[in-house]
Amino acid sequence: MKKNNVETYFRRYLRIGPLGLALWRSVEAKHLGKVALQKPILDIGCGFGEFALAFADEPIDMGIDINARDLYEAAKTKKYKNLTLADARDLPFADNSYASIFSISTLEHIENPDQVLKEAYRVLKPGGILFLTLETDEVDAATFYRPLLKRIGLQSLSDVTSEKYNTLFHRQTLLPKKQWKKKIEKAGFTIEKAQDIISPQVNRLFDILLISAWPSQLLKPILGRRFVFRPKFIEDFMVKKFLHYVAEEEKTGTNLLLIAKKPK
Picture 1 (cartoon, rainbow, N blue to C red):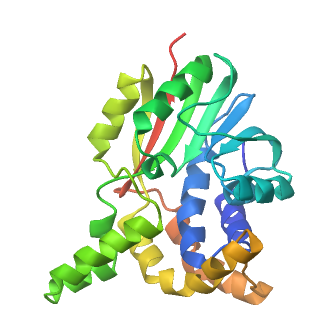
Picture 2 (picture 1 turned 90 degrees about the vertical axis):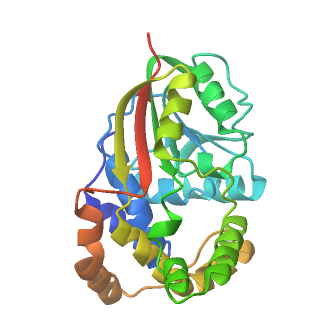
């Protein structure tokens, strides 16, 4: 399931989402696009199909999510052959059903991610690949506004902002990178690759640009998806100014990419 180039991902995302999110998700798409995913493929936490809309050139075999409204919207994208309403901690699939599983920035939003990993191991075929991107406990310190509040002596406001942010974005499990790796291995997987992704620069830009994302975010409960309108010349300008943040290979990163294999 080899994908297009980085600019293609970025342009696709700019047409469906706010700039900050386009930066973040295009980085994840860039890395997933380097992996040869064997079919059938399962997407855990597919949401309303936004990532698949930017990433997938052909329909993904199965997407699951716990939100029925999101699955209804995901069906409209035509990027999934099948969609199932399910809790990732209790997958309604037989053992050894999928050759590849990917999950994009999902496990940190779920209580007891160990059970998700246990289920992923169960439904993955022997020799199959698990691809994960994960937020870690390093993300908040690399944002823009909260560290700024601390520097000017507003520690309490910074803490409250972090609490509200985590509640708003349903962040349940922010763990150190070493702990995420241990959980993968505990579930029975062999880690093939562990890489830091989402550079501090992208993280700060995402945080700075959050304010510009609110119109799109506020429309989501009404439309079921984010809505953006960008003339081609604005899209071209954004690509010229920001693509290098997506294209450059991260030397450091606040998030974790893990590629693991189920032993044969």
